[in-house]
Length: 307
Image (tube, rainbow, N blue to C red; front, side, top):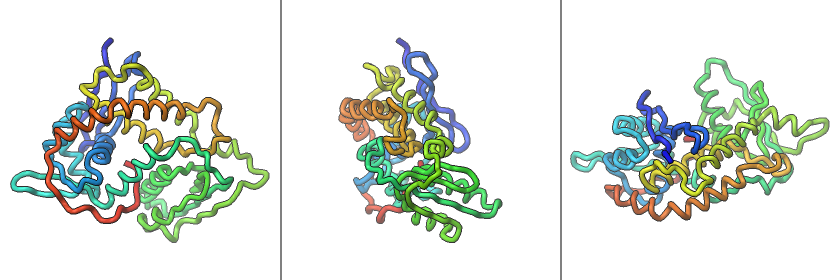
């Protein structure tokens, strides 16, 4: 059986995507940004080790995913520019290590993937409602705020009003974007005559979220996932990056507000089963490819954001 084509489209300073081909045996295609794959790699093999990795090690490892040298170097440059990586020169060689900002993102991603369940079983009946108002000219700030709110589990009700289950602390988001005077936040239960199911359908596209999980199952819930991948390191990076993308878009609604047979439950089971299959071999391959130098640890992690 022919395996999926793992390839990369090098364009726009590394903003292209790597993806599996839309072949019948693998389910719908998935597209993952090189930066997202890079963050997965850093979270698994660099976080907590106080090292900076030689640029050639990134190139060697990402060739397994069909990401070319130009795209890797462009991604590293962009991540330095965004404060997600720090350059460390050793002779004529350039190495890249974590920053406080990227450490925060990676710790948050680790929490979401491995420690937090996909079901909201601890809901206390409250909702957080956030409203914002800012000049139309602040388009970039509005975009960044929406991205961070989505990452934090909020859905949009329109007209600058967002909602999330349970209490959500958005002070760090407001501080980072300089919006302390532009946000209004309230928490409490929904009151009559609120139609909660209708409100959730308006705020969250649960069909799209469920579709993402079903596509994940189509690729991974099988005896031999991604048979065209070169090794378990490629599979592990691909799988965990895709899963983080899914849980990032999942607001973890309370169980009582989810449809029956919610596919995230089986998806999480498959993820854990395949972690046990791939993790040891993937780490062995990753460690063999890493050339690094010791560096001081980054400062205390900053606020996390979507990758």
